[in-house]
Length: 398
Image 1 (tube, helix red, strand yellow):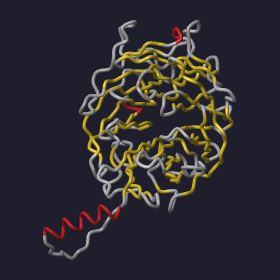
Image 2 (tube, helix red, strand yellow; image 1 turned 120 degrees about the vertical axis):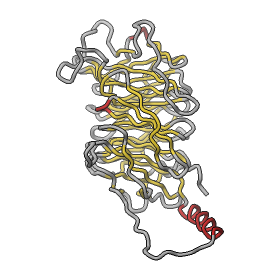
Image 3 (cartoon, one colour; image 1 turned 90 degrees about the vertical axis):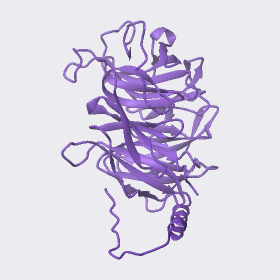
Image 4 (cartoon, one colour; image 1 turned 120 degrees about the horizontal axis):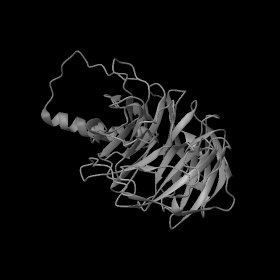
């Protein structure tokens, strides 16, 4: 939804000093703590581009309102994923139907300014993760002439260096194959079609993990890679780690010690300890979730995990201790949440993109109990079919 603000027909003459004072008062009065960016796959207009809604979040109530110039074009068709640079100065939006990643410079007021566009090596990118000076993207198909939706092949992962200005450089080279991507294939079953579903770069950048579904064997995997300067080396001799039936989302804790994967079909969460890049199942794993869990995130303190259950239209929160997850509670969202985030400023507010509800839900996270409370006037209207959510601290917060 595009919010419109009407200007008064009467012109008021004020001094320059009054303008400065009023601007300062307005900035403080908004108490904006974060800007939240929500991509939508469907947009009106001749170009059929996706859009990005920009919400500002009130630090006291958690109320979300779109900034006056929102939404912004996503720079391509069908945006499905997004990530923010480590300095919070750039937003990267993945447009699946164009095989592109669009870099936006983020203004101090939260506005987006398109700056650069790169193509992913493969076909139909669907997930992105960034840590330090590298951005990683998972493509649905490898860039082979024989790959298409009618004749699918396995997916791949690619790595882009992130420059000091936020620009993405040329993708890293896989010297073993002389390509700019790493294929997701199962040793011993090279003809199986493996579809990536999510990607996570562990804090610190030493490892990258890709959740995937083997459509031939109908089983789930996590592919692990060691990253050195963005160049990837398959872990475990290239053999993926078993991961349930149909992995749907993946996240690591802030320390980079634990990895969590949601299983869409089984309705649970698989937990692993990361040992020198290898994955060891946690005691008590898998942990029960709701119907068709579609997204997972860990709060900045590593105390809580929050899972979006797309079928149930709920969030489930868990206490995280030694990697193990203990159920806290389940809370209603808008219809079909598919993406989730936690505010980076206060580690206090939780947001979900509700695909069928065309809304964004907002919650306040209790830092002690891990329970969620609806923020003021939640859920909030978004554009049609929101797909992803990302947030940055408000750099100009008063």
